[in-house]
Image (cartoon, rainbow, N blue to C red; front, side):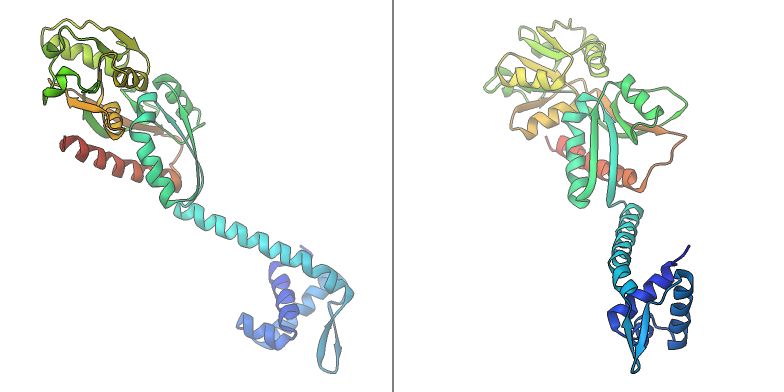
Length: 303
């Protein structure tokens, strides 16, 4: 290296302070130490940086030419240091998350709002994907972690439960069942029922709930998106029976919602690769996610 960082720093301070004495004071070292460093710098560079005139240091043409580049280098170093500090504390960087559609409309937005509110420098890439796609993205290390509704049995993954919410109903305004505090399968007899696909985790749970009550499940409308089911209920098409995350999202929009019995819980889970440690930024989001889950849990209990 022709010009070390220490030599560059001494050069910058001498230019700024106008003397070796001033540079030494700024650095908290002796004047001889600064003089020695300056001499070493000039030897490395092969030209003089200063000349002496009546005990004053006068910058050479080479020094004046070099100064803007030196200042630019220090500015770049400061940017790197600030970024490293932000990354260390989890305040900055890019966070990539794969989330299943239901949670993309329910739990995830609450967590993102908390996370970004506390870390305005951070960026979030939220990819909506099914369970299989989310699992593949995590295993391929194309996302930091996945947020899913359902189960995954891959030994290459670490799976952690975040929260479980019960099934619930979203009703059209002024629907007759709005008079009930809790809705059971038999209450839905004769009403148009809307729900998600039977082969989804939520759909399977709804089928089992009706079977447990010995009530046939006759869906008027079946969709692969819980948000669509919610919109259909809001439009007056029928009663949507959904997992709690979608019901919670519907309630936040001012829609009519009711608990469903029997009580059936569905778990939101995070999954991440055993081969890749979570970043400080990812851990910060998981903390925000857990806080959002606690808020959601309280909201459900207050219904």
